[in-house]
Length: 273
View 1: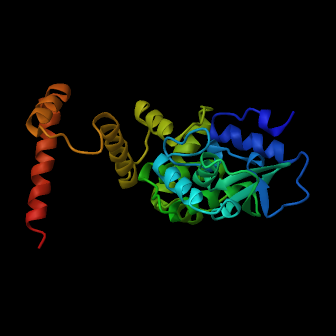
View 2: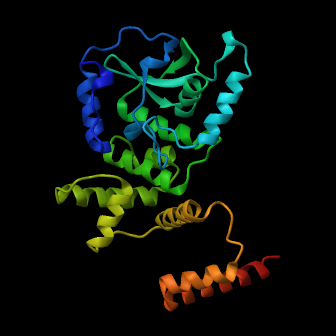
View 3: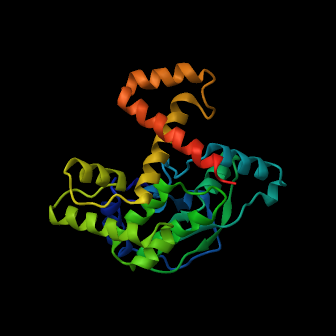
């Protein structure tokens, strides 16, 4: 069976086990500096931590469009972008950094091979590298995405607390909390999915999990994304009607808490001179 026909497991931990098994078969003997687009495979479950990643690992269509336009502005024989970083697993090359570039190549109908660079190291090191590179690109990771990256590294268990924090961009305190949560999941022989799923489990079972500042920021991120998806990137023009709708939906106690926070926020801004 060829690599393109293989079906990867849906959860991160199962996908990593699948990769370990695949790595022992038909190891790649040569690593050229260019590869045909069809030879570069993607595994967003393992190497793409961005929220809402599609099958190809892409999350920002506007970024893909900008890269596509940059390619189409170049001569036919010079339509290349920065090398895509790939990692050899068995006889296959998987993208660990450059998902948007791959999508742009395909959108621009680029034929032939494209430049690549090979990451050398263990699978755990490749996953950490993918997370670390995502922090440095022009599309900054949200707090939710940084937490998911850290969670994956905690599941791997191959890195120190400091290395996990540095690679993902969260605090060591948050990593320690994640380790505790993961141990509890394993001890109870429960399925280990995404970090968001683990948080839901912790809340539902009232487990003794510390609620960190990073978790709070991630929850705010999710609320904001929900607002943008529902109402668009701009704030509603009829503020009073919108506020009344929120009060009817959430109840007077919730509306009072929001009003109290806004009042406190305004006071802080007034005194910040």
